[in-house]
Amino acid sequence: MEDIILKVQDITKIYPGVRALDGVSFEVRRGEVHAICGENGAGKSTLIKVLTGAIEPMSGTIEFKGKTYEKLNPKLSMELGISVIYQEFSLIPYLTVAENIFYGREIRKGVVRDIKAMEEKARELCQDMGVELDVHKRVCDLGVAYQQIVEILKAVSRNTEFIIMDEPTAPLTLKETEVFFKIIDRLKKENVTIIFISHRLEEVFELCDRVTVFCDGKYVLTKDVKDMDRKSLIASMVGRELSDDYPVPNREIGEPVMEVRGLTNKNVKDVSFEIKQGEILGFGGLVGAGRTELARALYGADPIQSGEIVFKDKKYVPKNPRTGLDAGIGLIPEDRKAQGVVLSRPIRENIVYSILKRITKVSFIARK
Image (cartoon, rainbow, N blue to C red; front, side, top):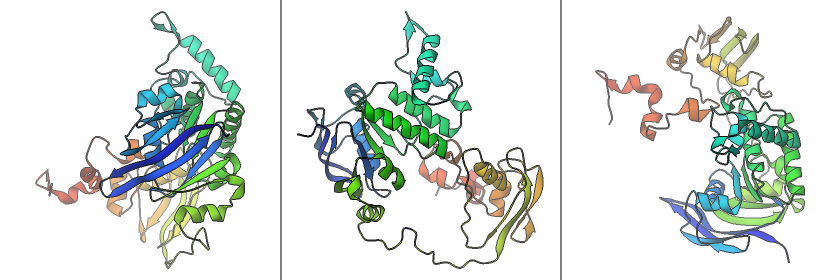
């Protein structure tokens, strides 16, 4: 008989107007890497929240290591040995790498934290995982990719039996992804069970043993990865056969709308390109190559030292974000939580934040 570590039975969660999970049932075997795939809105994030106790299901049961629960809470989930690596980081920016890894379960000498011991243990963990990381560094001084690696190390350090990984490789470079794959291999050898959620289907086929597919909050299927190919997996996710992964766009490309020549600042050097009306222009490169920095410079968030920009047949000099907004340029930033929204304010205010001048009368915002 197969050793089942997790059994989800008829889990349902309904939000106003949306069945986020609709009678979902599936099983996860001990020691496997089990992928969960589906389009945005399929129910993957809601399932994570149910398994970690962040939300309560309206019906159904969760059986974990032979015990049945109608609901979990975050404390119980952690006590059971369920760890999560979220797409959104849960690190404390101004603490060091070592302090973040052991946060909440610090090594102590009496009542005092033993920083030296935590740093030594963190170094050993980095060495075991093949990661080069300065454990003295504050997390806020690390790039996004290395912050994700700290999240992974934090989960691994707990000697957990069950890890949920939500898009863990999204911010990683190719080299860092290879390190991450080695970490997965190490965990598999130690019989750790992993639920792996990713939109990168090549990772599903390379890393995972089985895959469960959700569509519109409903369970679709569970299969061995070796018995599926990319086309059949995508078809099960979207509910129909697809002739092309990337359909031919139905739009006309017009004349150049922006021309950039020799753009240079402290982060990018001598960048030139043009983009035409109706066109989608992609910038590729590894972490640190300057893609984000180029976008910020065009918007006016970072200063430009030299170069020329022509936008809509006029010379464009982005001195600050207001210049970009007034010219009709928008920016969706890489770090949306820190730079894209004001988390403490309601949705209606965030949506109109960039056009407050248009809806202001005599220094008062027209709330209606």
